[in-house]
Length: 354
Image (cartoon, rainbow, N blue to C red; front, side, top):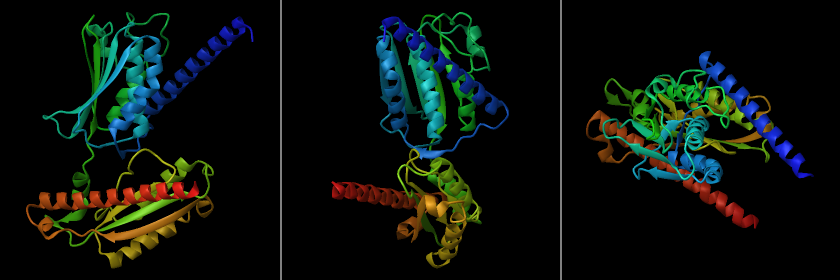
């Protein structure tokens, strides 16, 4: 291929990618305005998402000779958020920071806890770029807004990226804002809720200011029957999760948010305010309802187990809040043990196959 043909193809590819990004942003903005944008919160690690976003944008930063660094609070807790949507926000903010930072500049991504607001994690993207004037700061998150002083021949778009970021953060009940001065760079900050199992459990495991008498942890594992999975596996998992939520008593049971990023095998957990004997009714109902999903048996296998949540004697002492926290700690321990066993089992199967 001649050099000029290669250059023409690169130009075409760049234009196609830009057009695709514009169409995607228009669709996302339309969903946001019509109330159809969805988030699917999970219990996730921000550390992994931030590292993923930085890895994706590092080639762009290296090309401009921009330093791209990460600063994470060692106390960083898990958050209750949609990993795909949070990654979208991080990529958008990092991409903007790199575009508006001159060569030999720097971009820093931070995540930390703020003592005055312990229910949220604060994530920020700071750059050493040109900064934003006060007029633009007031409008920068509005739909289709573009700062006339920042648009140049090397930048294209519709002014929807930050609007979409704002809507995604809003759906997580968080906030997003910008701090900037001309010539001093900019810092975009947004918040995400800390994952608090005790907070989620309180309405369902207490009654009349007392802890309910018994609890069971129900584990539901969905595994595709083939690799790669048949059909749209993500839609199948989403449908199963919706069905599962209709199989429990909303005032006494809780379907926990899925943990980690979406994976091939999905493990879901339910904390049920019942004893092991009565939980059989629930597990039977769950199995029957899930197996009614179209082609479910052909697409996947289903494993359901129920284990009583046993608390130490001192876990039943103290205030109601302390008792709920004891249940939450025990459930968390049980889930982590289950996940560790699963990972060890997967590792052993891999070794055996070798």
